[in-house]
Amino acid sequence: MRIVIVEDHQIFREVLRKICAIDLGHEVVGEAGDGVTAVEVIARTRPDVVLLDLQLPALDGFGVMAATAGAAPEIKFLILSSHCDAFTVHRAEEMRVQGFVDKNTSSVGAVKEALAAIQQGAVWFSPAFREIKAAQHHDPAAFDKVLSDRECAVLARVGVPLADAEIAAELGISRETVEKHRANILRKLGLQTNLELVRYAQAKGLTLGARPPGKGSLIP
Image 1 (cartoon, rainbow, N blue to C red):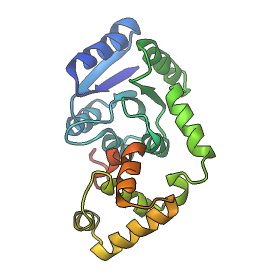
Image 2: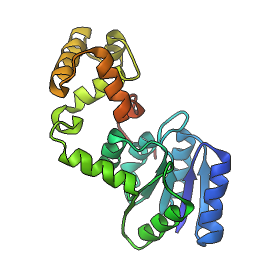
Image 3: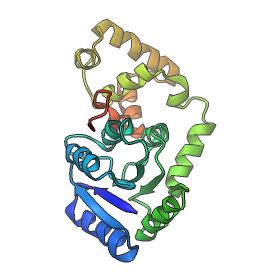
């Protein structure tokens, strides 16, 4: 397979390059250490698979996928991330990624297994990812079941945390509308205070996607 590696830590990029090129015999056609460069490299090389970290400078991993999805839907994404929480799992499922390796609990062997599965047309998700997915599926009060997309966007920014005026400016809505969303979110989640709301957003990982890029592909 032709592979692009997107990871902001150079040492880890070198490890991944060795796994892909030397251990498994794939062709590493490009590398990037930030999201914007990643989009450019993917546009230029059109790889089969992108090994993608989520927490990147300039543009996060979800932004990279959103930017490339329209023009290059055939590219497969294998996420390698230390963020494995409810919102990350939710977003990864929305983006229909082909695999997820949790850096906190997985070994080099997991990366090899995931790449082998993707090469065979299958998918591969770490046990931690699958456990969180199952918990969300069986929780009737999970945020993805009770909140709208707009409420999720507000909650993510509450967790940063941003003030209501800042949230209003980012989302292009009035401060009063933000206040109404905040009240509705508290009620739907069964929370009492704004501090609980901030902690909830941070615990679920919503802040990772708090400032997504605009819609539309960046690939010509």
